[in-house]
Length: 102
Image (cartoon, rainbow, N blue to C red):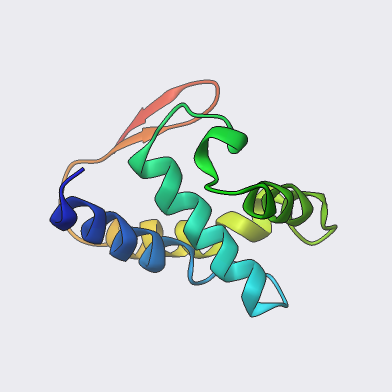
């Protein structure tokens, strides 16, 4: 992968997930790293995404933590999306059951 693309994905993950509602900054950093890696390698499993056994264990431990709910992890991302949607434009929103066009 090109260095510029990787840098862009790192910046994207930072912006989208910096607002995760997790009390430990290390968990927020792990969420950002997971998001970045998933963006670089979509469709891979956690063991395939992580570069070491330590990273695999840390990722699973994050998801086992009681505060690591989808709502808490996605809180920053949702806030960013809502802010961006305040700008004029056409948006395609995906929902697990339907598509919304705004």
